[in-house]
Image 1 (cartoon, rainbow, N blue to C red):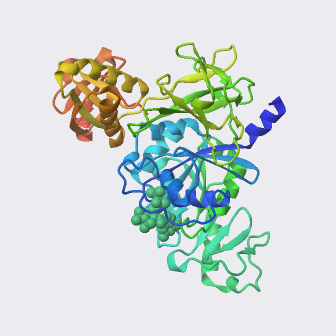
Image 2: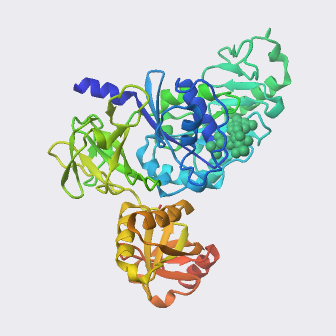
Image 3: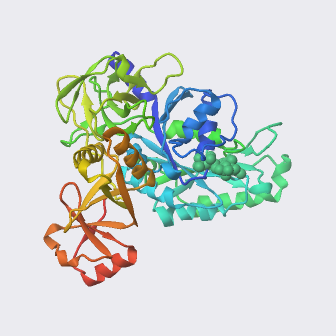
Length: 525
Ligand code: G4P
């Protein structure tokens, strides 16, 4: 690809993830987006996706239901001349560290909130990770066709609970059964809510943001009430600030109803216009690498093991940070210096629906992996080594004690444990005094995958005893006194040998902080 072609291709990419709490409507809105992208022809609720235990992803259900071929991790489609990549962030029982790590591979995030419930627990967790990256966050307040909370409350909650300014791009005119439309502050029009899709959809507003007096709606109280709210927003609300949006300090807020496909296209249109194309990536040595650097490079952000014992292969998902990916190319694995040939049988593209498209910075490629890759690995073509900045460590919340079932099989137990921990499937801790193995995870699924893979890949049956949820906090080794440990704050060390306490709960942590006020405790992300 010529430099200009590469630049144009990279400029077209919009790579993002949807963050939300289960049931807020992520799957429904994803379906609508696919509809606009022409990937599917008909939207409908995807049924049955929550019943199967290893559902893996809502998208696999979409794939099955719609008979389209998408990978379980990336959806790619074109819209308004842009190449959209949506990365899956599994929730429900599929929530895991991979969900967090996926957020390291996107350039923007879309936060879907149920307008009746406001900001919920999982959204808050995912938001924290996105915020730390300083990437733009766009908000969709969903389920407007139901009675929800006051829009002003919802905007205020963004600031109160998440510490991000909200700027309403449009404003609901009523809600639930009384939903009449959306007052569009950007496109200066009213988007009418029509369940049957018949008739005029938009009413223009004049330069003062008013309907023509002859318009019947202009005399309706729902319209005059909306004008009052808009005035309030204009006078006392946040001012739109693109710079703040780009740094993740202000979120453009769109209202709508994914189920009735209301406000979704308006959202998509503005999102595509405002969301950034792939930018420079920070490297481990502090340099920033331009996405249009001619040499291909990328990093592994997720490894998915096949749960089918007949197919042991794993897939390493690589976010391309720079250059163009070519089939059959040779790349160097930065960690080991090993050269790998990515021949046809070991790779697939994110988009398998049509003819293979080029993959450039911003895109995701999946590499069939026979055990070469670890999470966070960098690969590069060309002579100059490229090592992307390390992925952050996350604070696990769930813990299990683990022992081999058959004590005679210690060797396979240790091998499996070491490899799965290295790969990033779970986190490993050892107790200080007895050296017991303790696994940590952010989601229950990680333990189940661990147990399954230990048995199937390493022939090691394990016994796992739940410890439950704990608050993990690291302590400066200089300040550590082993006597500080008790049953309420178990002292363990991580794989780097760094000490941390697993507090029974927040009260135990507070009690500790009162008792040892000079001790500084820290969390990972
Ligand atoms: P998720 O992927 O974020 O978990 O949410 P999903 O899209 O599956 O939506 C969860 C439920 O909310 C679904 O109900 C879906 O139809 C509904 N929903 C999504 N968007 C809207 C909306 O704009 N308005 C209304 N009224 N409902 C919406 P469900 O099919 O009954 O599923 P379930 O509750 O049985 O799981």
